[in-house]
Image 1 (cartoon, rainbow, N blue to C red):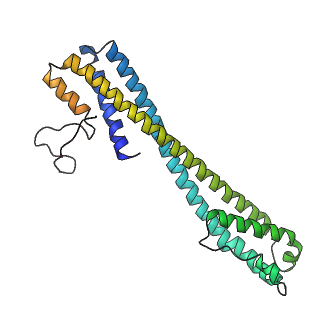
Image 2: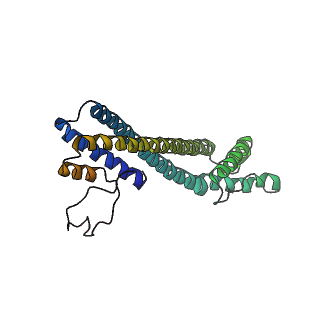
Image 3: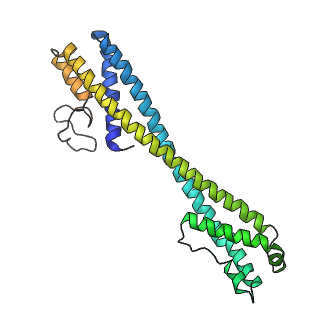
Length: 232
């Protein structure tokens, strides 16, 4: 989650807690409805933030798995097939060209296309390749590894869709939270405008950068906080 969205969500939680704490002091009617709506938005935002994080984790996991599978394909399965293909292609340059290893810097899709081509050609020439020293199990292992590689590509795309979709929805929900807080600000000022202590606590709660600290109290890490602004 972007820092600005996280801070606004944290602010919304503080606002909710303030309203819950002072509900017995006059928060009712329209204020109660506004609080209920804020709680709904916070729950939705937290769910989207979780979905966003899950997308990031899933994408990272599929990327790491794909890198591992690709290393095995490049350095073991395809390398073995390429070596056998070169032996079988003596005197047949056209056949030898079919078993050239994909470039290590090839894109994932290009790598997959070339590897699939090698598998298809090897399947056609299986009898010849086996007679030249290829294990009969190699093509099955290669097909399984390529299928796994394809699955990691789809998993990455799905994770990206989940992350991007959640991020867009989260941005929209947090924007609505800011609008709801502005509405509640008017209601709180109407109810508690004459109570300086409560209004100070309210201003601290709806401060996007974090709650106010007492004069001279250092911020986390020993630094003095700078000027902060309340939610607009």
